[in-house]
Length: 361
Image 1 (tube, rainbow, N blue to C red):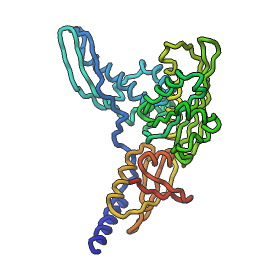
Image 2: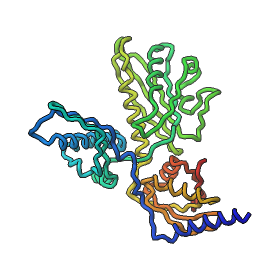
Image 3: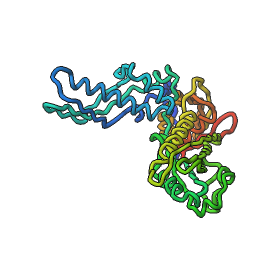
Image 4: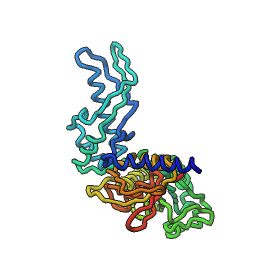
C-alpha cells in the first residue's frame, strides 16, 4: 500500500516539475519525412570540375523531390516541379551523409543520405501555398468493386489483381484492400455498395474510416471502353465522394489498362488525406483531461504530443493524484484535431467544454 502511494506521489511530483517549467512546447523533433536516403549518383569523371560538389548538388535536388512527393498533394508536387530549377536546394539542406563513394578514371559514383531542415521546408511550402501533411494514417479498410463481372471477366480479374498490389499511397496513406469474387458481385448493387452493404460476412462498420471504390465498365466500340468510377471516402465521420470517367483503348493483350485509372484514384485519395491532415493558419485551443495512474502513461502522452507537428504547444492548468488538466494549441479545427490525434494512438471523447484523452494499449 505504501509503495503504491509513493509511486503516485512520485508521478505527481514529476508532473509538477513539467508544470512549473517555463514551457509552451513546440514540436522540434526530427521527422523522417525530411530525410531522403540511398540516393545514387553517377557522373563521368572529369579533372575540370569539382565532381564531388556536382554529385552533392544532384543528390540534394533528387532528395528534395523525393521528400516533396511524400509531403505534398499531387497538385502541389506538380507545381513544385515548375519551380524547382530556380531554387537553391542547398538552402533547405541540414546535412549530407556519404554512404559510399567510388572514383575511377572514367566514373564517379556515390550514395548519399540528405537531411533537410523541417523549418525551412515548411516555411517554403507555406510561402508558395503548397498544401502538405506530415501525418501517416493507420490502415484504412478499402473495398474495391467491379460491376458486370460476367460480361468483362478478364477485366474483372485484372482489376482485382492490380488493386491487391496496392498497400499504401505515397507511403503516407495506408490502405488494406478488400476485393470481391464474381459470385459476390452478383449480390451487390452500386447503391448497396455505397451504403456498405456488401455481404452478410463483411466486417465493414459504418463507424470506421473507410474507402469504397466502384468501377462500371462499358463499351463505346470494339477497341474503346469507358470506366465510370465512384470513390466514397469517410475519414473521421466526414464523407467525400469523387466521380470520374476514364476512356481507355482496350484489346486482349493490354495488361496496363488500369494503370492510369488506379494512379489517378491514388492521387485523389492522397489529396483528400493531405487536405484532412494539413496545418491551418488559425490556431485553436482545446481543453483536455488525462487520467494518470503511473508515470509511464504521462511519458507516453508527452511522446505522442511531440510527434505531432500540428500540435504547436500545450500547457498544464491543474492536476491532482488522478488527473491532469491542460490546454492544447493546435493548427486545425475539431475534426482535424480528433483525426490527427487518433493516428497517434490517442482516443478522444468530446465532452463539449473539454476532451477526455486516453491512450490505446
